[in-house]
Length: 113
Image 1 (cartoon, helix red, strand yellow):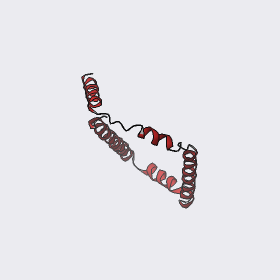
Image 2 (cartoon, rainbow, N blue to C red):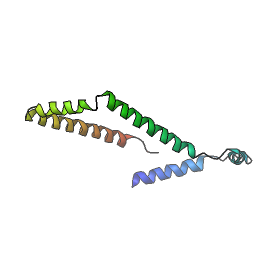
Image 3 (cartoon, one colour):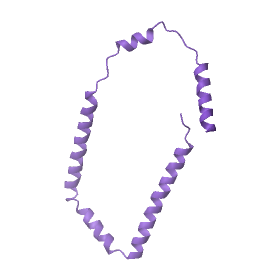
Image 4 (cartoon, rainbow, N blue to C red):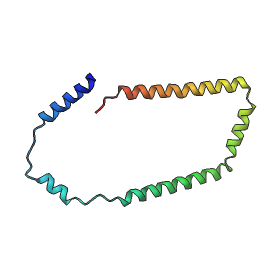
């Protein structure tokens, strides 16, 4: 709670310290002359991106012989001894857990606006 009060205090001090420079309505006039934002382009970009993604996925599937490499990889995994599978499961779990801890610690150390 003390950190939040300190941030509020700093925010208040910065707002009070910033002098207002009167521009005689220049900013308001410029903002009125700007064209309104166009919403249609965002949906068009999303449709194009989704279409390209689907096309690339289909192309990758066809070029990889219908996903046959996945079947081959699963067959190789089933042929491994149980101890190797256990070591693989623990190793990958530890790897992802360590990555999550690193990300969480880096997010915790970032200054908040």
